[in-house]
Length: 117
Length: 283
Image (cartoon, rainbow over the protein chains, first blue to last red):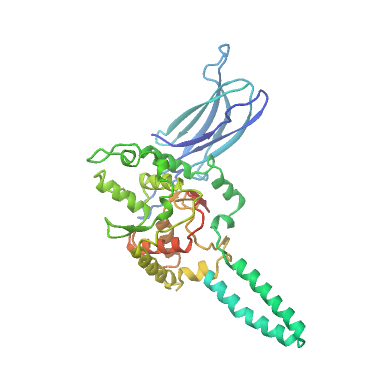
């Protein structure tokens, strides 16, 4: 299932900088408590988890799948098209892997490069 | 709202003038009083020239921030849908929007002119109807349903090209549009529904006051299609108009009805010269 996303990562960062990362994903976040205009229950359709992993570009990095730098558990009271922003301290160049997992097999992953000088 | 404000100014000035004339029996003082009236008149007309405001101005700073920053504006997700649709070859003719129109940037200023008269449809149509006209006649595909992701996405992406431009209905060259605007104005002033309210009652006379927790906007269509927090999605002006009609407990016109397009045309006339800010965010 393709989803649209808006991810903001600074173009470049200096070592030690605190940088803001923003991630917005298109998703209905249907609670499962609402009815349609025709009165039928709308089945629950939520994003359950969001995670952002950092994979270091350096070849000596021990962990190829990277480390989780931010994660969140989402629930029914969160609005559609959830928007999350968080801060990271830039240490080394690498890539940020954003992953949203949800009901009905929803899985969306985006990778954005982070250049640290 | 402009007419009402001017009427107030008009009614107020002779009264001030009379009071000042009575108060000052001496000729010099009377001249001074007339000068004072002139200054008052000048400043009020200067203020009354444009009291129109986009509902953006009345929004909470947090909601404004969502619109101001394209990386936070959720409507940009729909714009992405539209941008992705633009080069897709579809329909029986396997044409894409880009095949005829080229780069989408060339669509700059298009959205400022809608609704406008269509020779093909022989009536005034809005931008989404225009997109569907291309869809059925050029691509020879089936029309996209109103407010569907593809249609509203294309409309958002096209409207965004005109961001920052003034709303400019082509009334000078289209007498049919002038007629539609006039019919729209009648509808705007028509009391409807169980609450017996017209558009004018709230959006001209009570604009700026509060309805529950929210400020009543002047009702200028400057940001459409908008991402409405209440909808949690992007929607058309017709969807918004129908929402208002349901709220005054009237039966809304069907999507695409000529009455809704005429209302849209009148709103565009009312907002002529105001800056388009599509895709907007509204509460």
